[in-house]
Length: 227
Image (spheres, rainbow, N blue to C red):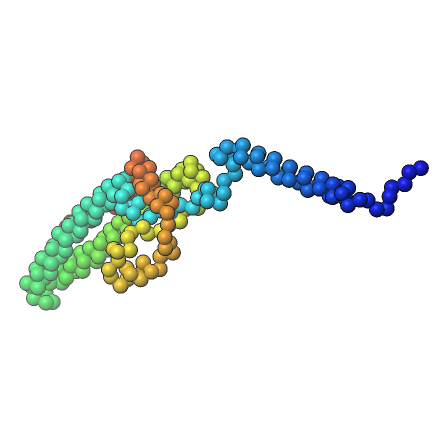
């Protein structure tokens, strides 16, 4: 029977302790060599290469440069001017009716008849003017609603193609454009202080909308008829 000695020589102890250390050095060397052999474009991207998923859009700018929306607003403005012109004609008729009434003696049959007619015409004029104002206001609101839906659709298509997860509304006008106190205050309250120009998708959305049909409104108010 052989017994292992309780004590070993110093040289043998050094050899035994050196083997694990040499194995560790070998593993580190192989790992470094493998890293050098992997092409740079196949290595995991660092934090700086992370894809941006937030985009910015100036909705006011988009509306101002939306070709279809601008044409629809111009057509609405023509309708408003026509209605105002016809109301002005009817107002002139009311003024003439007032002069005719004043030409008669107060209390006379002619005066009473003209007074009743003037009251009726004036009430109808006021009702028609108010109805026209409300109709045009509804039509303008509908134009904005349809245009905003078109903007949303264009944005949805863009973010689906480019992997964007969030789109934030902002004002991209230059800070130097602010001159009035209200404008300066609005500039100071902007939530977006600085941004990368690549995050601004405003021009791209305008380009997409240039190919879209103009907003359509089903209700078109008729101008008041002159009397």
